[in-house]
Amino acid sequence: MTFAEKHGALHVEGVQLADEHGEAVRLCGMSTHGLAWRREFVCEETFRELRDVWGTNCVRLALYTAEHMGYCTGGNKQELFGLVRKGIDLAKELGMYVIVDWHVLDEKSPLVYADEAERFFDALAAEYAGCPNLLYEICNEPNKGTGWDEIVQYAERVIPVIRRHSPEAVVIVGSPDWSQHPDCALDQPIGFDNLLYSLHFYAATHRDGLRERVKRCLDGGVPVFISECSLTESTGSGTPDLESGEKWFGLLDSYGVGYIVWSLASSPETSAVIAPGCRKLSGWQDGEIKQTGLWFREKFRRK
Ligand code: IDC
Image (tube, rainbow, N blue to C red; front, side):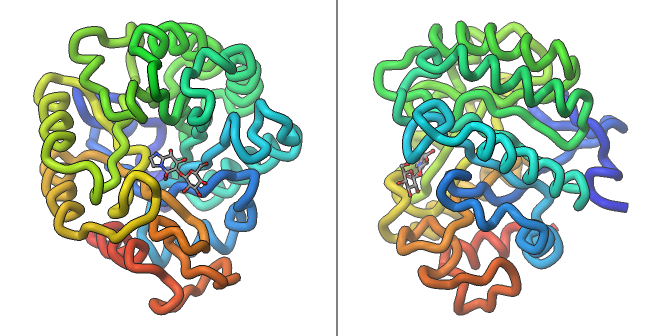
């Protein structure tokens, strides 16, 4: 029986993600790099390798909205939607969970492309209504001046669009400052159930201060999900900080918080887990996996 067959539809109970039997479920896996320019990894052999060799149970599909031929800035919508569809269908076949990430970044506020987001999530949720494998991440990283009130306003537009088709679907919501402030939900939670609030950490940049914030959220009843993390600096480059990484995992493990690693790419960036120049889509030897990849693979495999 596959992981997703065993656990079925997920929901949020307190600060935990729980399965259809009410048991806690911890999702862990890799995020693709931007689908538009690293599409080769959205294939059966890669997902199978991530499941069987790396020990992951979830894949995140990062659909950039603005930069690099983003979905809302001249990207080929049909093709990009096709890639999303391919990723979801593969995850379903392999019994994995899958997060579709509306990768808000360059545009700063999710309100900029909110109309597009409504159209996208309407089509997606209609096609995958009731699909237990699929989680919806509606805004990767609001940033710069974007405040919580704008994010709430956006969430109140997009969540009902998804829930019209999939009333129980788990939705992941970002927060100000590149998804570093799920604590906004301590004072002002968004008025829907089955929500996870994302927090992103890059261990060489984000240390005790952010870890304490996560703890405060969890102790205060805000369900936090790490929908992006790496050991590197927040630029996606720089020297990986393993010591800070271990501290992060001390915290995440003690609360059973799920996590997704940035990113499944082969490039010189230290956060890209596959060595630059390696063209393989599976069967990577240790020498073809970068330090961050080997470190996280160890974490995935512990269970
Ligand atoms: C980075 C990619 C890099 C790309 C850049 C801009 O690694 O190749 O050029 O985006 O598109 C995030 C973002 C994520 C970033 C990542 C590293 O969600 O898109 O990816 N990061 O900077 N938040 C914090 C770090």
